[in-house]
View 1 (tube, rainbow, N blue to C red):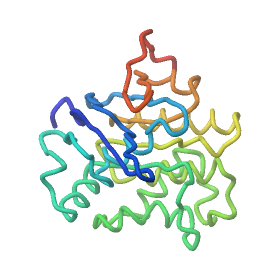
View 2 (cartoon, one colour):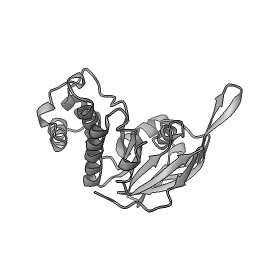
View 3 (cartoon, rainbow, N blue to C red):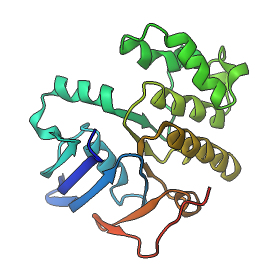
Length: 232
């Protein structure tokens, strides 16, 4: 696997807003190396979600290019993109997006089964145990707290051994104490797995626990001047 797992080059995204064009992202370029944890910070509307969508191949840029390793996303069909996402990506959303009719165990098993895993149940159970949910595997999302639901969402994203984790405001719907606990779980799980992670967050305290912080401002990605050291 190349040392650089994500490469974004001159990414721009423009949409029509009424009669005028609106530039959401403007000439964004950066690399993420294998194993690196990167926080993307910026106010609401700064383009964090749009950027993650472009990196995941869920949306197409107006101009520019995203590559996973040596593979440029714009060279792939929709089927090719879906296959690449299955191999490379885990995604954690602010709103959890667990399937309400499935238990915690079944939610984590689902991507494993879709990938053809023959040991989906024990692998899912092992992941849930790692994040302190061994006693909750048979519970449905509505029976879980917000923090527990997000832990299920995190291990669902990691269970298939992706190379990259993208997380969009993963603690945005949680209170401060629960957010800190969930972010600790996320960072610990990511580092234990050795994968790269890009985490969009409003919370600078939590972002400071990652290897690197970059800031979106007026659609442009700006590096934070002061170095951020790994604190935990």
